[in-house]
Image 1 (spheres, rainbow over the protein chains, first blue to last red):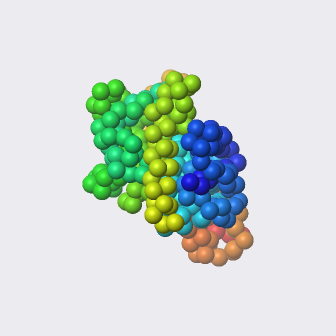
Image 2 (image 1 turned 60 degrees about the horizontal axis):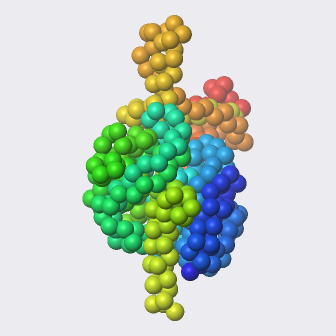
Image 3 (image 1 turned 90 degrees about the vertical axis):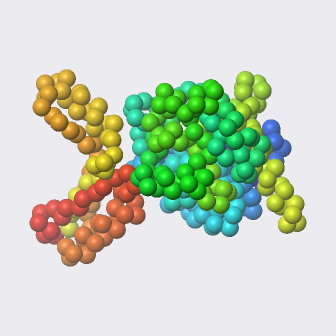
Amino acid sequence: MRCGVVVFPGSNCDHDVYHVLKHVLDQEVSFLWHQDETLKGSDLIVLPGGFAYGDYLRAGALAALSPVMAAVKRHADAGGLVLGICNGFQVLLEAGLLPGAMRRNENLRFQCLEVHLRVERADLPFTRQLRAGQVLRLPIAHAEGNYEDSSERLDALEAAGQVVFRYAEADGRITPESNPNGAARNIAGICNPGGNVLGMMPHPERCSEPILGNTDGLTIFAGAVQAGSRVLGAVR
Amino acid sequence: MKARVTVYPRREILDPQGKAIRDALSRVGFPGVLDVRAGKSFEIHLATDDPAAAERQLREMCEKLLANTVVEDYSVELLHGGQP
């Protein structure tokens, strides 16, 4: 499968994502510069973590207007796979590919720790190797992960099954204590109605190899690769 | 024409930064501060001399870029009474 990792000025998890896709999962991977107007034939696009455009104005706001994002939107509209991690999730929100917005963490701190996530949807390309209700352990590292939207829009998001991951206790209970940033309804990751665009605050690329002590993140990339290969196999 | 755009967190949304500033103001001798909303201010120099056109452009700028209207409100103000 062809994978494209978007590099904005200020991206800093781009090489980690490249490494996982290329060297752990043995896929074809290219970097895509923010000024690129095409995706070099990529089937899976990853918007990595970092501080695109220095997070000037708002996290993700300027990156959302870069040339490459017009191509990413077309790719997403055509059903192509898009994964936004941390700052990449913020870019997807600002670009309108996913609903809602991020605010500063409730306690105003940059939160850098491991959290538990409860899987709410296991039928997406990205989560097909997981079970609904399964609890993953993934690292987070962000100052703006406090997901927010109006209560009506949050209700609609839940009703449409677009909540994919929630911050949880180790046993899967959703509690205020397990919420590291104040995100509405403990939301850590959401998808678009089609399920082909996923945004998540935790970093799966930081826990995708045994040497790192945790491989929970690999399932998300592997799921996308597996799903993408199957779709492509049907087409070719 | 010059204008000032102010973007601030929506009223109904908790503003953690504003709350922290309010608490700090209380610690430096201003216990009477009831609420603080922390936002951003932009001074914008426009080519147009037409106040109505300027205001329309500024609002569009807010909707498209300067504010994220999911969580922020904005106000626009022409400086010097809208005089060039």
